[in-house]
Image 1: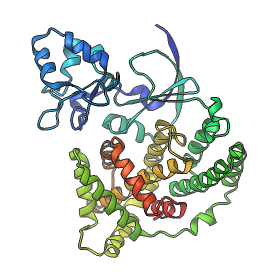
Image 2: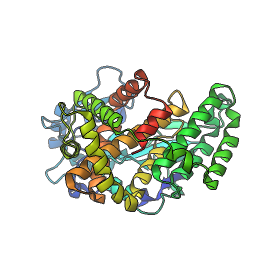
Image 3: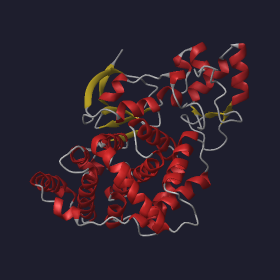
Image 4: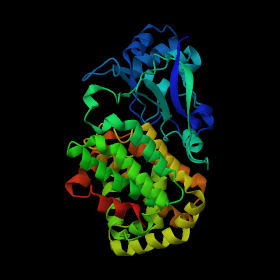
Length: 411
């Protein structure tokens, strides 16, 4: 079998599905696409039990049909996949083998991209087992370049070629340098994680300015300057001058939660986390936001900050995985800073949820933190409609700026 190079985070090398032992299930609450090849396979199956299930629950997509999105699975009334066995294994895989899984089911929770001709494999943290493996290692996340068998069914979702002539005058030309710089900053534990994020904000605002004025070739020199300043410790005093404004954070939390509820939430694990957060902060529609903010600040100081002093690597690992999995900062958004805003928004929402949960539990544990991040990832990161809505909210209200990102980052 032909092999090719693949860049893989080390946590993924030890991952395997734990099936019935999983606290959540990837077979509930999703819209599962069936590719055309698998759809045809199902039509040819002669197993009497599976054939009836295929006829009842596999539907052809009526509009915007494509080879990758040719059909879909019709879930049952509880949102469960009808092919899920009582002991939480897939009936299709059990009876017909892995080759009969759709591309969607065969790939999840992996994310596959191709950068400069090299495959990159990572994984979404919406899988509890992946979340544990990726988040709970205290050492900085590392990546290995491996030789792996080519799997034609698991095609790259995103492809980026920095050397393409179309990128000659764009920041994407320096994608690799930008990615390495970003991860290097995120893993510099000389600074608090909030300060690392703010430093990246200062950098990406300047990098965007270079790109807008046709000076993208100045990005490598800019990277060198910022790394030098960071090594010299020149940013501590500047960053410490940025104030925290908890009432604004609480206002944004309410707006974002309201939007997500309007779209529906299927993850019971996330609903439990959200309920604990709101209850811990005594958050109600009638309560003045200043009172909620005062409880938020108290929970931060008494419970969240002490936990993160020892376990800050969890959020660091989350951000590094976010950068790698999403081809940050060249994911296809209009600007580098737009990618930065989206990353900060994910971080800020996770942090705000955890602070509320810390108030509820009178402290945090690694397990609680993983539960929130996993269920948050499932609820937020897999919903493109929600992501577009919150990006629109930020831009329409003038929030997509570095000063506002600083407010979300700092406590």
